[in-house]
Image (cartoon, rainbow, N blue to C red; front, side):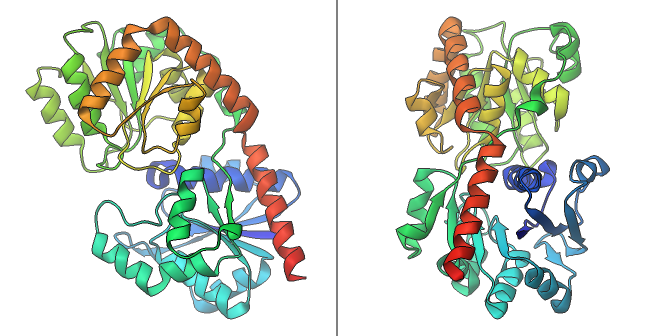
Length: 383
């Protein structure tokens, strides 16, 4: 079986969770004997990333406009890629690449899966453009898909609102590759010095993600400022690429006289990220909207307690006692931070519960097997 995986961005710095999901699904489908091709843009595709996908064919189209991610790819090249696949998988939403692949699938009668990863309903900036995209092609992508992939049960409602029949909606959550978090851990002092030079081994709350409005780092910083005097030994580490809020966050830290206790580490990955999670008192995920945060699974692999908002698609993890879930507000985050930092033993137990859940239910090999089975079902139906 041949599967064409389409995602306009493939590296985690620029592409976030959908990039990681596409990357891992390709790796593990290939291990299960599925022949995978990835169609993406030539943005941020590092040599290391390509080496990890050595067995997967990658087609990286030149990007001629990085504001709207417009690919330089002829219709004949695109149709050849689609024609060669048995099933196509579209990840993310609001992209010219997805629209063009969808039109090629429709022309050639090729079945495809659609996984918008929580982006089907317009949210955030450029709302008018997003609504126009849905009116032009986005709603057709959803309603014409052989299957729509929801990352959580909550996301089913987004598809139903677009008129997708319930029987064509499947839930396949995010996953994790535990082998990537089996790094040798250095001493706490050495790791903390590498994470943030001013940390000096102090306990800290960790934020991992892009510094933009949707991820909510501004909410977390204000909440931390409110409890900072109550927990004077704790610092806040914000690790992630700038998404437009870095200077604002620096200014707010200075306004609260917390410039020595709030650290901005930039994007971290690999062993450095694992160590940051292993030594953190708490991982805080203050997102305003997210399909399902992969970073909570990474925390589970590293034994780190978690606090997250009810917009992260993690209600089942909260119900299992594997993390603290709060509303999307500064006040709710203040209460959640205080609860977590006041009860370290309880949080360690919660982290152990999360670790077991991740190992049992959220491995990429399991999710890839679900994808393979779904593709086989679709091909059987068409036959």
